[in-house]
Image (tube, one colour):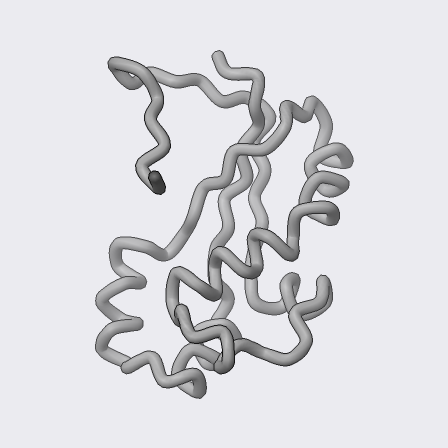
Length: 112
């Protein structure tokens, strides 16, 4: 068991609507939705839902940037205001207090 909790970020229809206005082709959205509809982020260990909510309130800007960059890397096409209200309209957050690693071998950061 890791000393981390996890949040799963899902995408709301409003987010996909924005993607279309940001120049992401509809067929690319459909193809990626099949395999990349949600993202898991490891966060500091939390024991209660309120703790997860507090961590998300602190990290939502970073999560927002990562989600936008994964779909549309051109920051000039990102919304002017990426506040918590927009975050909650574009994304769902599901928290998990326990993370257990069943993988073999060491964990590696593949981002370099």
